[in-house]
Length: 114
Image 1 (cartoon, rainbow, N blue to C red):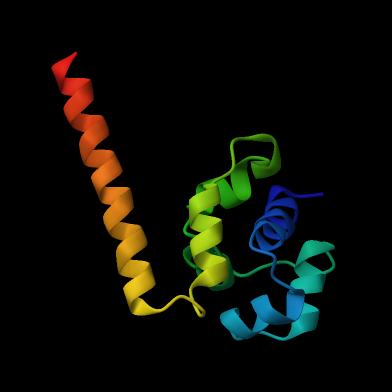
Image 2: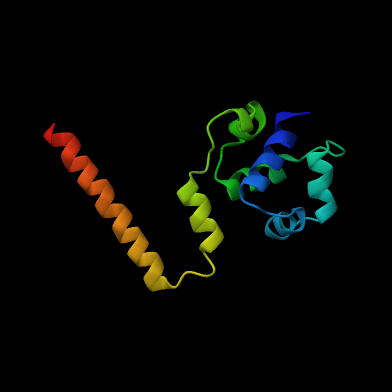
């Protein structure tokens, strides 16, 4: 199986997306996603770019290595944010982002004081 096929399935499953959901996002037929994942159909450069852009990975990473065996490209926080993006209120999102930024600031201050 090609790296693209493996990585497409891996990234889709990491985001808990059904093939139909990913197809809607990429504006392709659901069968196209299945055919890409099963290597029944090649992917165009434009489609590979769209997939890489959607998952925020490089085309080189998407096609050049087995992402499932490397560290996850999505942190658990990114996955949680993606899952809750449509249900969190703007205030909730702002509060979470504020807490995360403060945590990073405190970490950086402590790191610099050592």
